[in-house]
Length: 337
Image (cartoon, rainbow, N blue to C red; front, side, top):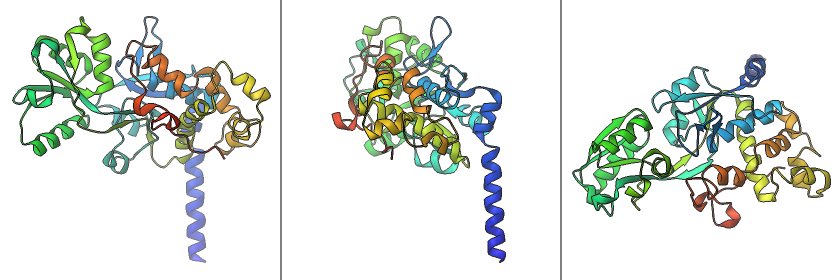
């Protein structure tokens, strides 16, 4: 009897937490609060009109489309490497979508959960072309600048120990400061995710052709959003909002063709994804048209990738590991069934 009462109390407690969870708070506010980078071209940066754009921005837009049917109902909160986790832990933001690496310690020890990977990357190095540096060992004894609060410092320490070599490491607060240090000659190299370096080279320095990204990659950097623990409903909404974009690309559904797919497709997976059959939205506490709204307003993963970081963007990054699994990449949607 006592065990049953304890179990009932636990279930009631869990139900209370679910009712007072992030989804309810977001609906009361009328928007999703999204923690983003202070400015990283291709991932999260306001354009000339002040509209935030980027791959990480689209992840938050997708959640807003799922919850409200309106992808514009997002407020963006710029965060640094040092402030991003406290902002999410404290409830200041509902999602952290800021080129953050998925690691064991981050997932298991800080009260937050990684949702899924939306960009596979690796730590690289940006140097001046006239320095005649061909690979990382050529920088031995030099100064490498990187951002504070990132995984890069530990990666660099591991690499130096493994290769019995030494660099002078300088930790900086923001990408803007990192760029200034590189331009002034304070740094022999800037180290970050290779996508971040491509953004810096493409838009952060005055003469992109004067800089080159070395071929060395010293780490795996699977990047993706984070949410708070103990709110499974909200984690499901964020995860499946991103999954829906990948699944749509796998199915060949775009923002331009989603209406036709909803009206005409006889594919059972398409019908479930777009809410024509099943109750997938209601299972998460949102409308059954959640995925349709995401695809219509934000697009599939491939559309987001191409306009933000792909060949249609200033970064012109190949898909590589970020291609679909059917095309040699690692992007793979969990089955919608």
